Image (tube, rainbow, N blue to C red):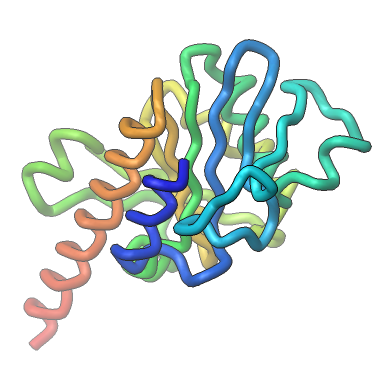
Length: 181
């Protein structure tokens, strides 16, 4: 988890204390706590919670636990979730319901990137309720004005999809900038 957290920070997808990571093992979730430094995670930055809500344990976990839990509940094959505040993905999600990658790699891995746009985007039951419809169709979504959630069979796969999303959105941004001039 620390390795992936470091890569997210070094690639500019998170600031020093943003984003969150979780892994699922059976009916347990290991998740980073709110405001932990993902690139310097220690044991004290990780919280083990149940797949089902438990108010006593949950309050120590990331405030995005609701969304992580929703993803795990939607597909039993998902074993890892990564959330980052990817700048290009967030910018490209403004005012659209989906992003179609311009580049061939983006199209290959993510034919379309769905956008969840709800009034309350942070630690949101609204996002948790909306995201479930995309779990089996794709490996990530962009939450408008907030960032990206990606998922996979392990952390490497979840990290792969978040980087493909951000790369595709960066290329889309550059293409739109080029074509505007």
